[in-house]
Image (cartoon, rainbow, N blue to C red):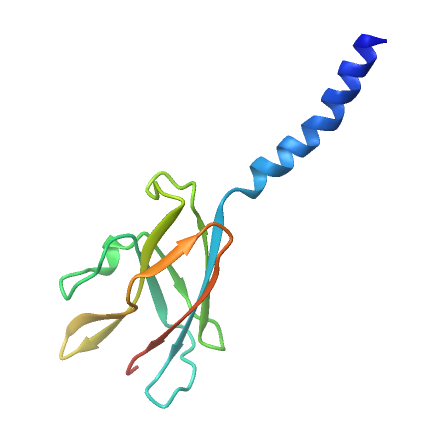
Length: 128
């Protein structure tokens, strides 16, 4: 009887453990890109930086990039268990690069603080 109870308990516990581990600590950040007239910009590339960006930042140094959809929105689902994100709360930066006179300059957000299960919206305006 004792063996049956242990086997039954283990059978009930395994699905619960696998469900917890597959969820992980995620945050969702929705970035909306508009032009100066507040019209959505389709196909703009939004870059995610783990460190503060500057005028010297380059797109190739970004952690991830996504293109905006027809509504000017890019949705980042951020895995807070990522080996490069060591805290359960972290600051991230979202940037769109604009070209002026052949020079690409970053236009981006202030630091966005994200925590487990956060759902955050960020707006970026630029001149396409």
